[in-house]
Image 1 (cartoon, rainbow, N blue to C red):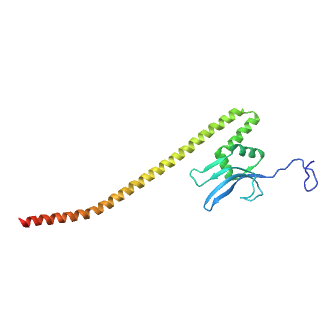
Image 2 (image 1 turned 120 degrees about the vertical axis):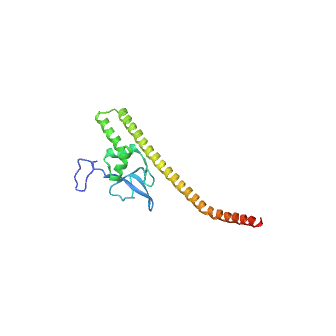
Image 3 (image 1 turned 90 degrees about the horizontal axis):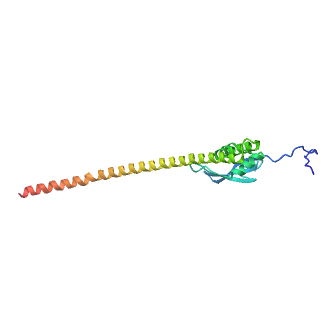
Length: 186
């Protein structure tokens, strides 16, 4: 039985609900944590969704992103529209590249193996960049900690040096007094 719209006509095309790939906010105030979801565009921001595709945690440096790449590609191929931030996250994780390569496979420009090989090469390169950033951040953090330790050590030595002359003056005074006392005895 064909679908009939509200005017009594039979539509020539089946029209599906407008689906968006977007972020759904979780976490407490000041500490956002997001789910990446496929949801009907008419539903609320944190309301009902069709499928959870992954998570995004912007609180860490670099931000942690866990994503079902194949599921996101399937939704994009079905016509789901990502929001701006979600598009950036999907691009960062390689979903847009994988969709592009899948289009090349459909057109016959690439084989499935070539497309997968290109995608894996891109993923390893991207992972190397992320690891380099993490190591640079760790080196900077260690250098800052070493600098703070050196400053604290210098402050402690200065404090000890400031307290030590008072004791030395007292010992010098007693040494002079003993010297005078021995001179008087002679």
